[in-house]
Length: 145
Image (cartoon, rainbow, N blue to C red; front, side, top):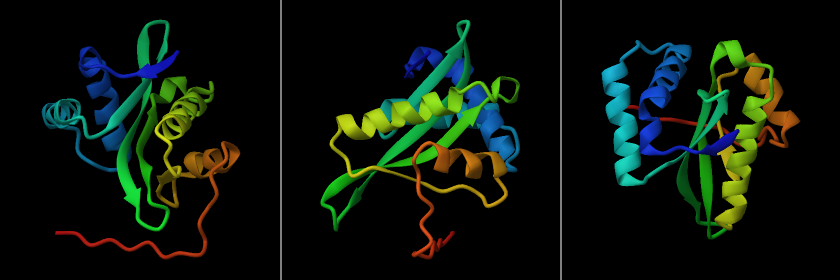
């Protein structure tokens, strides 16, 4: 079952969020990740959906609102998608992506954007299967402090 996360999910969601960060080569830090998630709930600056298996949270997707000036509409940045390793291959990621697509439709947005590492082989196979198109026409740049 996929649904929007609530503050009461924080303990289980925090465990998944920490595993997600470790997947992207960050050090485990349950205290900091819990504070980060609590801020997202308190500030209402992201939407988080979770998926369950027998009452256990096994995955989540987190989306942030951004805007397209050219389309004059909201876009949703699908920033985080994660399913616990022992539950992969069962369609949970697809369900989470469907929840993200539903949010985009319900908010009359221009769509969803995402970025993933080139070496995220599973993600790079999944996203085209669920309707995402690889943008080969634009360069992606970033600047860090």
